[in-house]
Image (cartoon, rainbow, N blue to C red; front, side):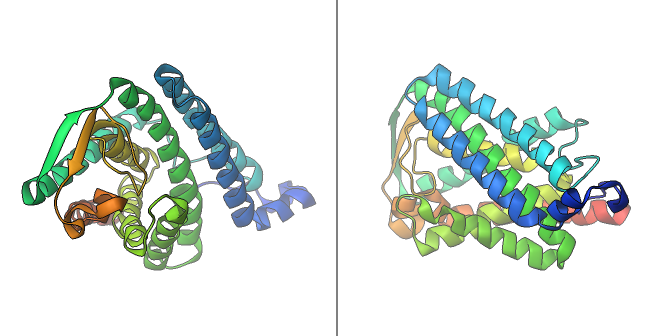
Length: 281
């Protein structure tokens, strides 16, 4: 997956060589700890929109800095190619537009097929929620794509790495409220495949981070529907009135077959792009 230069083992101390040999558990535990800490910090200010926005953006930036530092110290990497500076902002803008559009298409189709009612929510929820979701997206992509998928793909067949990373990502949401087997499989298959495909297509984490953030913002903080089983307050308050099999029920639209089709279709497009890029490399 990556062509990062590693410091020669001869230049490393015995402790650094030993640390690098245990890079997988060390990185997973460290980045999981960063995710939990940033989540607690965001929850502490979630009732104050402007503070929630600033805290979310701040913890997202801090998580990226931690990931880069750990990659250099634990893996002895000299460059972090999955977080390139070149094209960073264009990838973030494109990814956000793509993720927001994808969820909007899905929720619109669910509404057309099953009906829904929409009322006003809170502008503050949108502002504060953007910061929180930016932090969540950054932390989850660093952990599940930056660590799990990247290292798995170096050690195993890319298809095996793809499937395993998606399943790990999905079932990590078992702690969410209203979690169900269908909901967890939905996150694994549609969300995991979409983010992994975006990573493969762009060869960086910026695109999946932006898609992930935009999807969550659109779902919970703009339309105001359940996000992975968690009740959300958004700019709008959308009540889905169709049958559970169509709307996703208490888990939310991510368990709907409509969003499965939207996400898997977009994943297919991104995988084709990844294949074309690989052929041209």
